[in-house]
Length: 127
Length: 108
Image 1 (cartoon, rainbow over the protein chains, first blue to last red):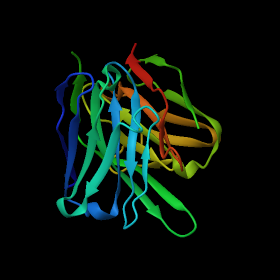
Image 2: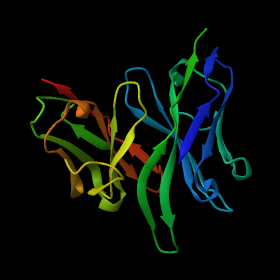
Image 3: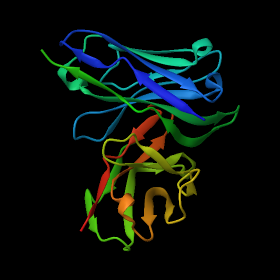
Image 4: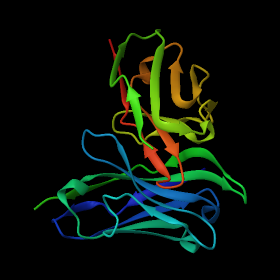
């Protein structure tokens, strides 16, 4: 069955770095778009970053993390990563990875939802 | 595109009907509108995509509708497990993912 396992969270001081991993199983990881979403304590869902599939991956970042976070994927390892640098207190959140079921053709794209989510990992930025 | 959900909190009793609203700041294709349920301490779960198509294993008590800027999630007969937070979400070009702020459905 489809599984996404998130790891790498922890306590880090402001200005520090962490690398999150999202390991997949049960599906062909290479053909799926993937995304990171976070949720600060007591708050709603906030999209963080997105990476498409295919030979030329398209990458997107939320304004709040652009220039500090880097998303990547390793299809051979069926994994996605989020390198987080220059962390701030406001980056404190539970970080989820999710699979985006998207079909893209020459004309348009079809979105079937963020259909599978990892369990989340907690990142706490505090001195 | 911004998504505004209303109400912020909805208080109902089991067996009642819940109607949750999601309004987009500009017209969006219904193919790109989804709804999620998040129970306390859990990851969100996909309920509806394409504005009205139920995801796998989602009971038919959940239904989605709408077009343009106004979308609705309806839960026909509330069960205890349905009391949770619900988010609408849009898939677009840039940014690719946008969430509404959520509606908390609580037991009255």
